Length: 192
Ligand SMILES: [Zn+2]
Ligand SMILES: [Zn+2]
Image (tube, rainbow, N blue to C red):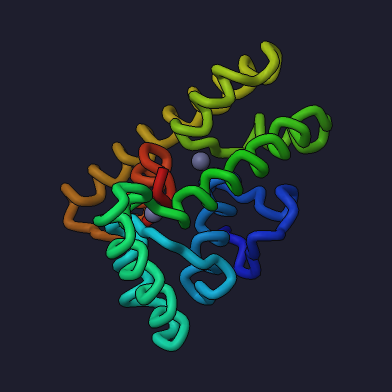
């Protein structure tokens, strides 16, 4: 169900898939694009997670100048006490990207076709649902509450089915555990 050709620029309508929070899916695509080519997103500081992504998963020739810049910044900040080297430019970029896509989601939900699909089949993770409920217009907040209640209900049922299978010695269906993790804390490796 997961869109295969998802890019950070994909319009939200292309990201709608069952079991997937569209905002989280786009954030993951954005983060993957940074890690895949970090020269596009230079950094003077990175958090633990993103520093290790850069070390382990980025092209080494792109990682070298970024680590050099962070080391230089660490040297400068130890003298001046300015920006800490573990303040993370990529987390900042992700938050900005998230805000833009969040606003787009709110706008798209004004369109009947989009909203109907989300109401019937959509998934919104707890984090984004809470934010929508707190900030969106009342009718949209009510719809989001409805979607999240359905999501929880579906996940509870699927978990019970999976538990039953485990007790019968059948191991298939472990994808449900990933879906629950995503619903609770977003897609794997997406920082908040
Ligand atoms: Zn989400
Ligand atoms: Zn970070």
